[in-house]
Amino acid sequence: MPQSDALRRFKADIFQALGHPTRIAIAEELSRQELSAGQLIQLLELEQANASQHLAVLRSKRIVIARKQGNQVFYSLRDRALGEILESLRGYFQRHLREAKADLDEVRRMEARTR
Amino acid sequence: MPQSDALRRFKADIFQALGHPTRIAIAEELSRQELSAGQLIQLLELEQANASQHLAVLRSKRIVIARKQGNQVFYSLRDRALGEILESLRGYFQRHLREAKADLDEVRRMEARTR
DNA sequence: AAACAATGTACGAATAATCGAATATATGCA
DNA sequence: TGCATATATTCGATTATTCGTACATTGTTT
Image (cartoon, each protein chain N blue to C red):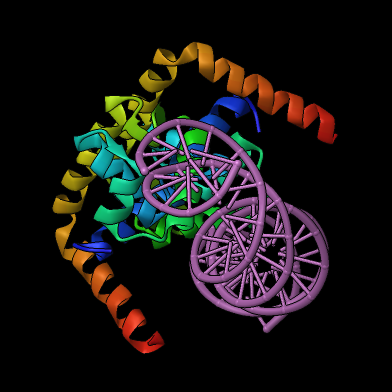
């Protein structure tokens, strides 16, 4: 592949890091306010280890900043642009609402079948 | 997880679909202009089957629209917002250039070692 | 119809992502 | 020091992605 392959990988890494519902949820919460790991766990009803793993992914891609204070670790989004991207996807979703709903319905049907 | 889990999955799906360097490259080309599968293959120097698989991913998440014309299939980005998101990541990259460069360097070192 | 061109799909192997359980590493406090 | 709390890491099993090879499909041309 020609040109700046490494730059593409960089971008792809960021997308990929956000390519999981739990990490989306974390990023959305953090775009509103700084939160400790524990608070995130409580808010999103996550397993402790699982949350920590997802936070590690976000940290490794530098999407999130960790600030240690005493016993706990406070997380925040590193760049507000990421919050805006998340926000702009809301618009995207609205714009394609009809089809998006069809997609979501299909997801639900799949879920129903799998249970 | 509370609240609209399905909506998060929807968003995560979009990120995940863009979470691969080849698909980023495809999306970036298509944000500039409509292109046939063959043109993409040539531009990005991809294997035919591989390109087709990546295009299938982008189609399945409706990131891309396929228009069949005679023998060939022309692709375009479904929503310019996606192009803008891609563009805004360029800004993100600039803003964190120093660290981003360190990341890229590390990627390169990893690559060098693996070869 | 036969050959060709462009694209898509199926399959299997290799690699990567995800999860829960258990364990480790701080830090705070009695 | 000893114990509790908050967070991170390791491990193994499971599932998902990715890739190349081979084949299928569709439309075009002769």
